[in-house]
Length: 288
Ligand code: PLP
Image 1 (tube, rainbow, N blue to C red):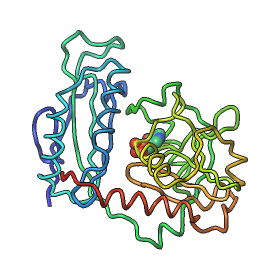
Image 2 (cartoon, rainbow, N blue to C red; image 1 turned 45 degrees about the vertical axis):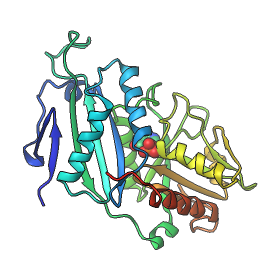
Image 3 (cartoon, rainbow, N blue to C red; image 1 turned 90 degrees about the vertical axis):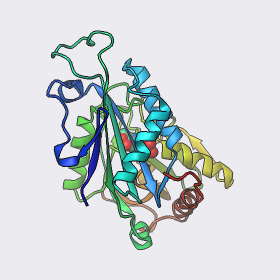
């Protein structure tokens, strides 16, 4: 089936979709993005994702490309045109097209917006129970990791390093030896005492929409949690660990570097959180 992309007001064949060579996203990574998951035709946490997109735009003083209602309409249309049942919607907004120069272009330069979809097959239970390996790397990013910008070079280098080490993700570690987050996921541990721990949402991490949902789910199920930084050493001694994101949901971690976590299989609380997250998605009402 042919893929359709949305580019600045038009729906075009994916292969023909293009932006200008002086788009500031292309030249300066001067743009932001969001990834919203669709499961069985339902958008997962669409509003919080749009809230964060609006926030990212505001922090960088990029104009909004359209109203929220229009954004939702385009989202539904691209899902419909691609017959997307389960997968993701990628939305990107840049500061638009202008002659290459560092300062912002003149006021009124329209932001550029593209939207694409990707079909996705969700992993089966056996794969989830197997868990994934993560490696640790130095966090070399800037001080505004709370903004979801398309400037992802450190994340890309880190993810590639993980791939080359046979791992799924790389946990970034700050100068104090504390884990910030993965390259495209948030990082979690469950301590020997059974406490669920994740780093607080400051400028050091992207405040994952999945992260926020998991905290709500944990609260609803009476799971004790604390938002505090944890060190790589603490993670290596944790009872369980997992990563979270819009596309990986709750994915158990069973190895960090050369250290096996727990008994080398997904931990029980991690699996419960995964089940509860799956239940939350199954219960979503709003159809795309
Ligand atoms: N941290 C980083 C650096 C990310 O890029 C992402 C997602 O892309 C996340 C965390 C998880 O965020 P979310 O749960 O909103 O997908």
